[in-house]
Image (cartoon, each protein chain N blue to C red):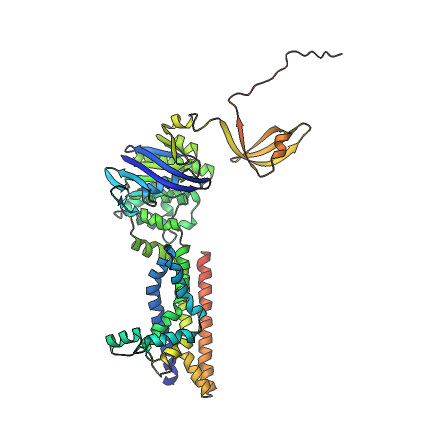
Length: 296
Length: 222
């Protein structure tokens, strides 16, 4: 059981704001803290790990107080018993894959390391240097390294965002399986709805430091608060003017889409702009029923 | 012949001790400079870099004042060891440590700053103390900077002249290092000795720097 209530003033790109979060995570839960970048998600995770200090509040994990501003308690990261997986892996380049995993173990256990590697299908890479691995393999090693410690909580900071879509899919499944097998209480930070939907049993939606919604993935992801309308951000690749309209070629994620807009709208846009593509819940369809202009 | 070897041996001894002492004080000092943000750090860095811009005679002059029997450090040393600092080997080692300090501190500080912050944080979250993190994560990942510091300090000490002359004079077997022996030989119009010493110093320095650049290149590629 994790109980926390923290407050910290942050300097964001769009001005200062206060990160203010109150959370309870039950034993064995998989919580995804979801929200756009710059909303304070990573800071929250770093505060739990002890890498950053809240201005005030408390953090309690499994009945042990890790941080309490009133009592002046602030355990260093070394004493917090977390497994932390960084967005950019943070594998030690001076150690082999095997040594990386062994590094953080409380009791060195060669068999356990090999078993973990086997589960991830990476036995044959045990003695390779991590710099020679692919992104997906690196993140797997980082995950195994965190798991090998058998931590009280597992903290994942955008672990899939540096991977391509297919690799992310595979690894997401693996994270899910690891969680099922080991049951370690997990908090994952992500700006990706798919992570929240597929992995979490609890989701917190964070925006500019405030918890906007909290609940099961469905409650949060499909609520009006987090998704006021169907909208996608896209990058404008090309404008093609025809007689009356303009056809925009847009990149939405890795997909290409063509959208028709009127010329005035197109004139305001230039290639390379980031645009928001949105549509109302329904589009009125206009069909001619009757025409007063009689053909002669 | 043995007379010819003495200054060479002395130069090697001086450079060895200077480099060793610099490494021992350089690691904690550079660690502090790289990872803390105090106002005093700017002053500290400026003081450490002074030998780069001061004429060695200026530095040597102040060290002479500090090291002689009436100077603060010289007095203390005399009371402790019953020996003067000036005109002795220990004196020129201490002077060299100060003189070559930037050659060690600058690469090490840059090295500490070059180690990605998240490697250090990862080590902390894996339960490792700051000392263990330093020894097992930070230092092994800045090998090139350590090597640069070692080679530059060593070579710089081999090549020093003014400070040693001011503090140590030119005492055979005690403070007369190769660079001073060259000066002495030229003064005595003994060009053949000067030639030999000069050529040895030139080849050594070139060799040291060349191997440094080759190794650094190899490490930065891998």
